[in-house]
Length: 395
View 1 (cartoon, helix red, strand yellow):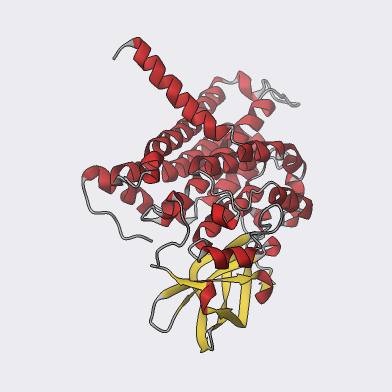
View 2 (tube, rainbow, N blue to C red; view 1 turned 180 degrees about the vertical axis):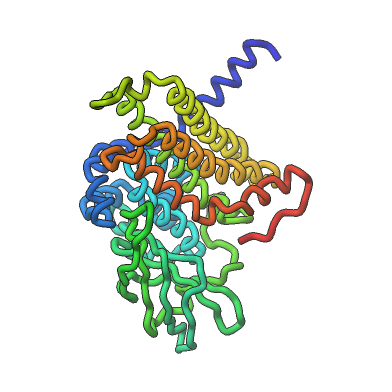
């Protein structure tokens, strides 16, 4: 291949990446970064997101990234979702997590018929729906029959963002022993404050309890139903693949935030220190490895999804290309955890200071790694098509 061809291909790849990095929704997220940073300590201490930030995120459409265009949502490209989460997490991991969970659960709620979803979330209101959909795919509720629907009782846990949600997705087993999902207004249940964790302390991931709450059958769907939404997001065989690119963005943004903050602090010296951190070669080496790891993880996500998504859009899905996307997603989370672990160790006693964000970022990523998106089975599921093996069962 000629040098000219190499340069052309490189230029094309850079252009493809920039389309998503500079998208208006990503720009909207970046514009909020200073305001989010100003509230980061408050978010950590109070365990919740300030209402004015929730409203700002809602105003900019950042809670409707995976709501179908036909329901007046953004139906954003997966890489736009990735970069939105990256920008928000760069400012604060807890706030970004709340938006991330809402984005992922919205993708699931869009299995409802468009007319029903639009009506429930106010899709035709001026400015688009102001919904904030959160929930859980764990089977935590029981169902009893009722005319035209079900009576649900139970208690969902780890419902991130439940305090500010407008709608909740709950999961139950119907009378034919099938797993079903239901979309209910948040007011149908009650929030029970239970969230007290090592990291992501500001997510307000409390419990939500239902007590004989009625849900219409039309507001439910079976786990194995085909999606009603029109769009490539809902044609991918395993919906978790599209959902969990958001986890990758969250991890990359959190880790890069740690790197950028530490670059400032590394130039500071304190009483009793012989040199600032940046003057110490062992620290520089660990910082370099951490930055390389995060940058490589980011680039892998961009490359894998840039190659795969046009095939999905043309209904020419290739298991190998989707496998690479899954590997990129899960690798990003683990690489970013490892990077911040390096930084934390290299920072010595200074790293434990709560006046630095490093220890918070470390705790946040340790907690984020417990999500299903980072479980080991994702590596196996991603590599199987590369080894010409049958895919794992969809989870």
